[in-house]
Length: 237
Image (cartoon, rainbow, N blue to C red; front, side, top):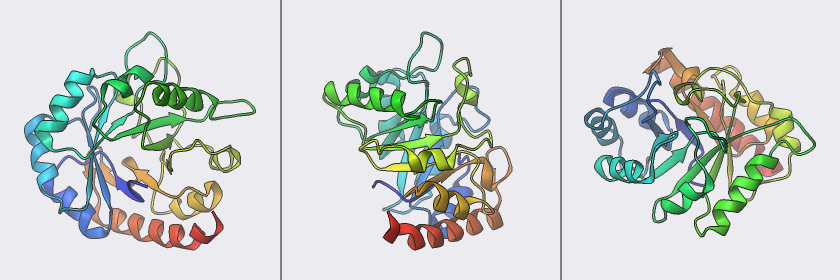
């Protein structure tokens, strides 16, 4: 498990320091064009520098090339990269399994989504298997809220929409550790953990006062509620 509580979409050093002080063990820095939380290199470096050692620094990408991801990861000092694009297709914002192989040497987290059917994680399962077959499996999976295939890269996350928690609980495990994302707030994160049996959580919009600006009270409350629920459900997994 790379992390248990991740605060994503951080845009200022103060918010990054706040997340770490509140007890988050990972932060997310967004490099997806069109997102209200997107960062340039200089801003990302300042945000990353604000967290102490031991807090995972994750870069979020969708549709970027391996060369671009490597360049940013090295410049910012990322500990992991999160592929948040579509699993397949010919449109913008697609992160195919081959991209994972091209990122060998970097720790990869894959964002996936539940789909209708008897196995809501079938598409995710196929992507992960293909990446593993190419020699570089994902180290962790984040299950986010569903989107349509035509959704632009900048709108693939941080929208406040939720995933189907019960469907995730009933799905066959993927293999890599799984985290839950999508519309998680201080008010619903404990329920989401109990319903989904997720072992980790990730939020962006759920602890904001405005896109990209975190609310200190919401952030602290979210981390505290998440940690209590994760501890309570750990023995049941």
